[in-house]
Length: 275
Ligand SMILES: Nc1ncnc2c1ncn2[C@@H]1O[C@H](COP(=O)(O)OP(=O)(O)OP(=O)(O)O)[C@@H](O)[C@H]1O
Image 1 (spheres, rainbow, N blue to C red):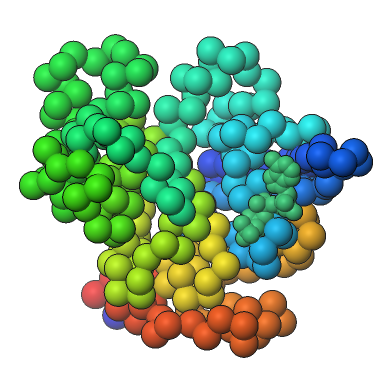
Image 2: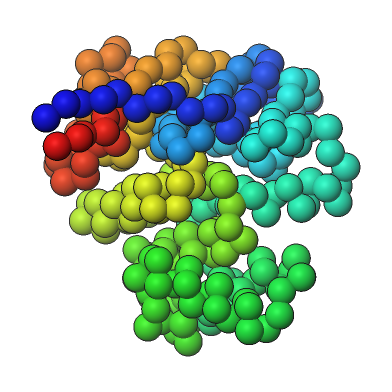
């Protein structure tokens, strides 16, 4: 048996010298992201970890320009988003799905209509095409039987799966995940992480995930950046368990003992094995 290292792939997300400042209510400014440069490669699962208030979510939201940087540039899949007008940016965002801690589903719409929503907004697809795409996305997250249910009738894990199906409906190259498992229990978290890994491998969707939980990033990430005070303090590849060896890892682990890591259950995507 020979083990061949995977050939590194091209960068899909490039952030260059991005900064973001928020105006404070009582005057003054807060520098949430400070001159950050970062590359995420095609097909990677990339983690952003750090303490509360470090700037992880702001950095994630710079990738789809939910937050506009004050300076610097953001390029995704060859398009410099920071150079686009409003209409072009709306179109470019179809290539970037996003899920959130609190799911952000439309409560008065069925599961089907939640997933169909982005497809209807952007137009260009027939009713039949939308229905087929919604069915495919719900099958992908194993919710094929829940199309007619409403969010209030679903568990937290099922709600997050609907959010994933909605985020993938337009066939994006990138999925941004902002603390996607923070509202879920340990077992549901494990299952959801396995789903994200599966989506990454089957659909080749590049994933950027924010979490303050070591076990979450340890389980699925290829590389991780540690965010401290709005900047990247450290960046490294993961093969399982390294997070705990870093100074921040030890600190976070002592604050928040990690649940049994699901990493053992999920095969790392580090090497190609030829029998
Ligand atoms: N819209 C805003 N207006 C003012 N300040 C903001 C805004 N959004 C974020 N901040 C501030 O920027 C800093 C970074 O916030 P951010 O949400 O990116 O941190 P985080 O690392 O994701 O934290 P957490 O893990 O607690 O979510 C925080 O101090 C926050 O209060």
